[in-house]
Image 1 (cartoon, rainbow, N blue to C red):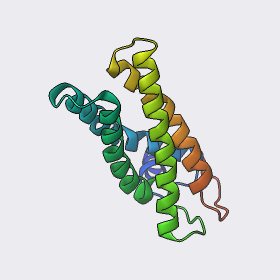
Image 2: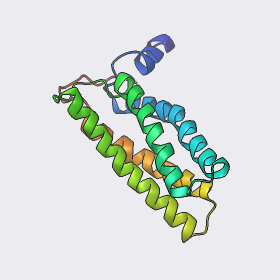
Image 3: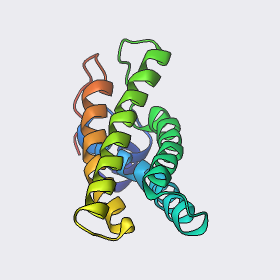
Image 4: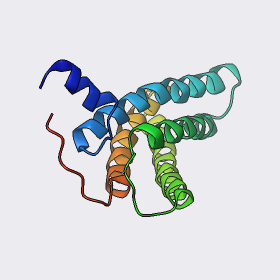
Length: 150
């Protein structure tokens, strides 16, 4: 496979292969992460918002960005559900991710006495894998797609 074909499969064509979905989801998170972390730091440091509330607000804003890009580029298969049901499922996964984020940030900041930014980065890493796994499981196309050779 030549490089043009590889990049077309990776960035343009339908994303049915889990490795392609992981790469694309990683890129989506790379876009959403500065919104999440930057908003978190700004809310906490500049506006003096309680760090767990700041984590909640910044996560929610980045979740919206993540959703908009993900449904257009990562989870492009047909699940067999109506679009609004998929949006609710995506949101529920996000709410679980938010709960994990808040719990991890609180625990690592209060009990492990880590800096609130380090706590957020730990939460971010854990929630990335939770979110990808859950979304891969629930949003992978329900109709069989041929495996894409990478």
